[in-house]
Length: 503
Image 1 (cartoon, rainbow, N blue to C red):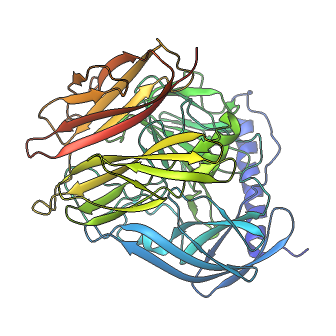
Image 2 (cartoon, rainbow, N blue to C red; image 1 turned 135 degrees about the vertical axis):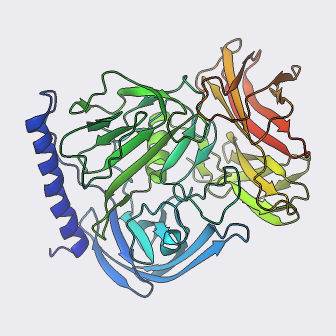
Image 3 (cartoon, rainbow, N blue to C red; image 1 turned 90 degrees about the horizontal axis):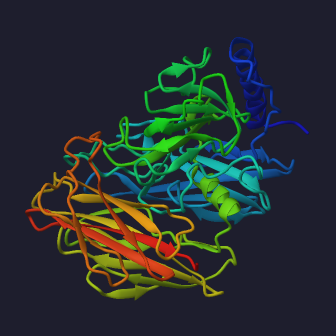
């Protein structure tokens, strides 16, 4: 069967990749061994509106995809893209996609498809990391295909899904000291956690091409590698580069030229480097794109799939991404990206900071006062399983439109296999606030506890987080609430979902 230009490009890149690996084998540690190439299951096409492509899928079948229209919705505060509508026709069937963020591939026209990014993300963006020169990037898989080959990828932190704050691919970063219309859209996934307590592992079998400031010969130029003291880069046999950032410590055995197996320890999660002062793993994948440039390979679907395969949860709630509005405006909170293994979510139940409630996957909500709110979403599937997530809404003061509200990052560890009486470490760090204390409610009827973090005045301060240890007496689901108020009366709220197992 004649190959498409996309397929020809992928074959050429495979040859280039194995040239790099063979070069590394010749020049580096003898621990480097040859591995069989893995052809990615995903097919990627960049299209202009009105353009059509014939694509050979991983199972050898052919698909016709046409890009019909792209609509990007920007907020009035920063002119940042918050939502997209990407209209496509796949094998004669029309559908609407949303780009990036927490959206998973959908079934249409006898295959699976998603949209990674649209052209508007190249406009007024401090980080143009996509290698996109068309109107939209579409990714396609066979109808019943996994998104990555089973057994070749795993979740890169030993922690529960959505245990803390996250930033997704192409999610606008709303933070810093002052509000600007120069937008940084996130390049990869940030997975928040407790500083120094969460193990980071290799997501895939790979070659270590960068560890700290050391770079393997042949990978310093014309690659995505940008070394830093807190960063590790891996190169897998798909030809994909993986960046892991903000380690508190990198394992001494992670040396350039060596190979790692998926699940091997890389180090410990921290807040080093350009972390903004909050403790998290930054994880992203780069590969050659149809433009011929290096660009991001959106990781969200792969992380979601890997976590499900590894931990087999029946239900995963999702109330993300974060929302950003001005006091007095209305926002739509969306839980429709929640996932159920049985394929059906029976109930979406919202509880808001003021005590009011609502039902349904999408609800509208107005905020009259500035602050940073964390609203509770509880989803229940048809088997009675429940899960929680939290919708973060940052509401700025219209009288101070250049000023972000105060914020909190909260996390806890461990997140798995907690039993009654076990000590659980909770951490919190405030930003853009120096007054008052954090007030903790652990959700079990115990007295509130006060802490005072440093306000993130020095992002890399080793004692920036405030910590407290708590023990739960009984099994169950507990919703933890922590808040802190600044001198203007604006309050930052954060919430955590803790599961205590039977003994």
